[in-house]
Amino acid sequence: MSNNNSAPSSSPANKEEKKEESSEPSFFYFDTVIVGAGAAGIGVVHALLRGGVDPEHILLLEQGPDVGTSFRAWHKTTKFISPSWPSYPFGPQDLNAVVPDTAVHAENHPQHPTGDEYADYLHRMLANTGIMAEFENTVTKLQKMRNMFLIHTSKTHVVMAKNVVWAGGEWHSPTVGKLTGDSFEEGTFWHYKFADLSTYDPKVHTENNPVIIVGGGEAGADIACALAKMGVHVTIVEASAENDEEDLGAACAKAQAEVAGSDSDDSSEEEEYPNRQGAALDPSRNLSPITQDRLEAQADLISIQWSTKCTATRKVGENKIEVDLLTEADCKTDTLTTTNMVILCTGFDVSQNPVIKELFEWDDGSPVVTPTYDESTIMPGLFLAGPMLMHSLQPTCGIIKPTANEREGEKEDNDEGTLKVEQVEKKEELATKEASKDGEEKLDDENIIFCFVYKYRTRFAVLATKIIHRVLQDRHLANKEDAKKLDVNQDRDYWDQFAGVEFTEEGQVLRQRLKRMQFFYRMKGMYLTDLSCSQLACGMSTQDAPNYDEIFAPH
Image (cartoon, rainbow, N blue to C red; front, side, top):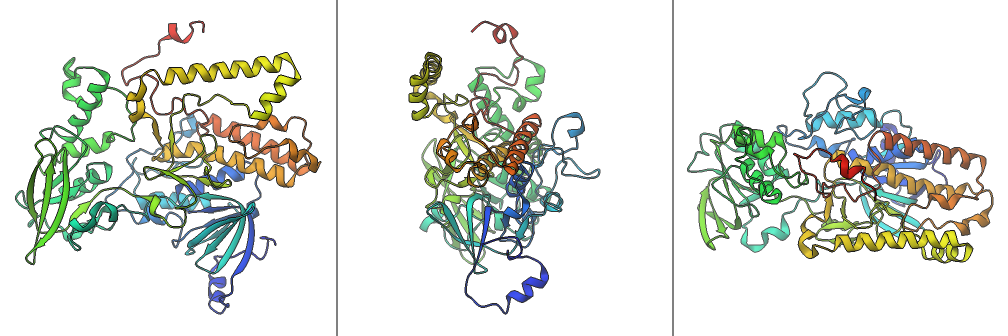
């Protein structure tokens, strides 16, 4: 089967023709299918193309009507917290770009793009790629038979592929059900994603009748600031933070200072800007500077109750909702009354997606993937890209670990090989001992969160590398017997395994393009393979300068 001329099409003409087609499924084949036409999906497309993959071998599936549908569904007041500007001619990449040497804003626009503006950028990035893209087509089932994936879709297509990249994002999986249970009466709350801000009237929601927001992260702070800008009084309920007397930025600063062991009274600058000081913790765990500034600007309309859990909501009469709030410090439950629905800013939970639920292992709601190529640990060939990506900080990250066969082979070949294996084993042993010194104290910081674009884009070229390796093995070996020398399912950088393997003429071209792609993405700061220092877990704080005596000290 071929995808050249018989592939599904998203053109208007073909959409009309589909109405008269039978309900019998049609089959198509692609080397790689990417599910989701958002930031991750478009970014992976470009990594594959720059790596030399033929655009006719890539299919992009999107359940929405166009590229970036989820971004267009953002609240109109919501903007990116990371700034965008076209700095790439001088080296630094736009923090929100998913393609190297591009900028979200083609012209002079504000630093922080809206969802619509970002979707426009993604639309530009898809144009002229030459790949097949299907819109308004939902993946309903994903299964694997032998070494091939069968992808069932809502348009009765069944697509076969050797590799699948799940870039479906989180927007379609709001966390509501398992948090609310029976204690939250229907019609008393809605998720941040569905909240209609126009229903909140500043004349109604005064200090004595505030809008209640559950969750003090970026989403909660964003919607609180938007409501406050309308003149609405807001109360944020946050379970995990402390010091309910302080504002959001100051509480974050105190948490940072406790970790760093510093005192925010050391200088006048620290007193004026306490939330800018302290340890450089993972930015995915703290509010961004622009969000802290917005909260400080609306402090007269926004109050925060820390260490407080929302335990129940219920209707009282026709127009009132009672909200039970449990304060952890004294285990006391207070009840607030409001006249509009509570807004749950409780995040998203992709583990409830029935399509991928059985295709990944899960750790506290996050898909578990291999540390080197972001591949499912139980379904080889299924890769993960996007904001739900998470890794555990490993003591041996960045150390190439030989396979069992290589260990035996090198030991048998020569003394040098034996020495090489022993050196790697020694490094692994030392790294493991170093990581275990503090015992369980490091557990809270061991998860590396890739929720921002500038984080997860660093892995597009990494997973594209493995896909291209498999294409080389499947299609471009001059001698099929060489396939026995290659173990593409090994979860490590095995590029050296191609030594002594002959490729077809097309394979040689593809291999050269892959090497150029890797170099290009690495030079642009978008090719992260060493996770050992990717979350500011190496001892540096925001106030540190490099210590060159330590850097140049003999090891």
